[in-house]
Image 1 (cartoon, one colour):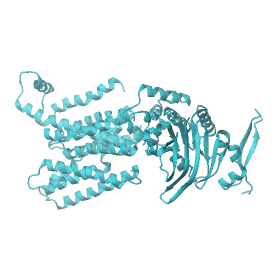
Image 2: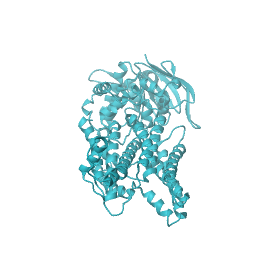
Image 3: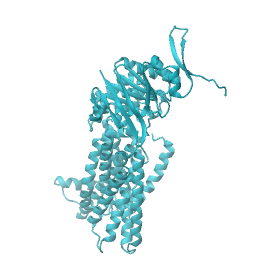
Image 4: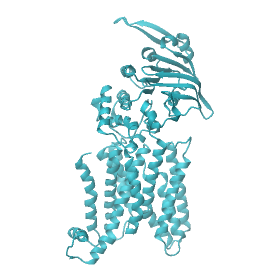
Length: 336
Length: 265
């Protein structure tokens, strides 16, 4: 990959970040945004109100960073999963992680008293997300291997099970205060972003991302199929487990702070592949950049477009589906 | 001098016995061809020899070392595999595919260096496919694909190459092109082991042939000795004769297998 392309890939999310900070109900001129940042390091005359500082650093910045982290994280997971499952239609929640995390959160909200503890909801979502993948992986083990098709099907049934549990909780949850909270959580949103959430999510996401990036060329080998990869000296079971573990860490951490955000992990790897080719050595870093940029833009739309916030899960789908339909038509299923 | 040998090899999928008590060996410079009807256990045998399946009984020795004690990447540095069916949904370039042959020489976090790329380029040149280097692998013809896979195998720099029906799905010319390349590799000192559905290919190109039926070797040896009317008739359950013809152009004597078609339909 040329140096110019690398610079563009780093620059685009960064520029988008600055623009997104200026936008919103309370518009802040871009110059002021830059000044406010510089004032943190250099002694610059404070010509703007404290409210500006507050909106920038306590509300918009953590939210934008969370969008970048989650968008980039889900996108690299999607690219990795599509590689190891040899299937371009796979998304990060194929092994049931989102459905189970949704159940974990719903249960925590349902069981909590009148005041819902955010941390316990997050923890419950995270634990159930990981549990689901663990279940799917173990169901699919035959002869000490995990054939791809069986693994995907196990993920689908585990996901279905947890979705059913979630529906059951919705049925019995108090329709006046608990049910709306559960429903909103499941639709996904970054509205409650805070530095605390950034901190909770960033550690597992960064660990997972570094893990995936470090073995990214090997994903090429896994995408040839187990037989081929094994004949090339790859420990296929170990590698699959490693990739699944990293991706699950990322997805569970994302879902537990933002709720279920679909489509980013499915569509953005495709866009990246169209732009930079299928080699996972390039594709994985590119997917981070495209996914992060995409979710940041969508989140700005979510909070600026209408008087009430639009849940992210709805927006990503509304944007993602026509785009995916276009991709399908254009590539005629050839995934070029 | 590379050598792979199997002593008293047996394998079964669950209760289903695939082959039993097979002894064989192949060493540098030889082309060992396994012939036999569909489902006789050829491919399974090849996989056991390459270490991708574990024998139920018996030992595979690779250069005098027990294969089951070797690490996957150690095996892959010596034995390379070309499978029959090969599919990937991603349009990797031909060069990227060939570079993947370098995997056993790279660390788990590594990726091909410029040196690895050079080795891959040379391998592509050796099979005459260098002009396709930037083409998507998914868009080239079946014959070109097989040659590209051979190039990947060469980039792996193995001592032994195992091929599962390397000439199936290829047109008449490409079959011969592939077989000639296989012979060239054997001359360079690589041990080749392959399965085939074409007895003619074994007669023309192999130095050793094994006739396999229902999980057993009926006979092993030089093609001229082993492949007779009787033995082939027994293997394929069909009347077969081995005929000798002279090519009037160069006086070369060729042996070919032909089916005896007694009954008129």
